[in-house]
Length: 72
Ligand SMILES: [Zn+2]
Ligand SMILES: [Zn+2]
Image (cartoon, rainbow, N blue to C red):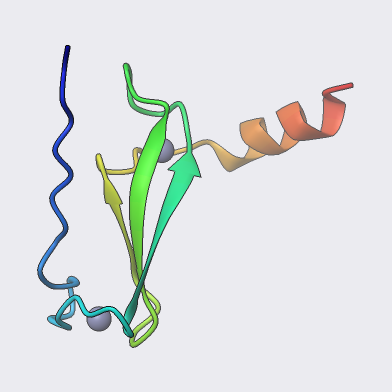
């Protein structure tokens, strides 16, 4: 049985430390990474940066919009 160990980043790309009152941890359902159902996210309220684990690949926004629009 595989165990996934989540590693929190220690800093954002701008150098702000990860703190309980500065970072909102979340989950983004996404299919961009093969074998993964989404991304663990860290949103830095101090600078508005969001980090993704695994890294968020480029998503074609026009495609995802049309899928949402035409799904019945
Ligand atoms: Zn920051
Ligand atoms: Zn993604």
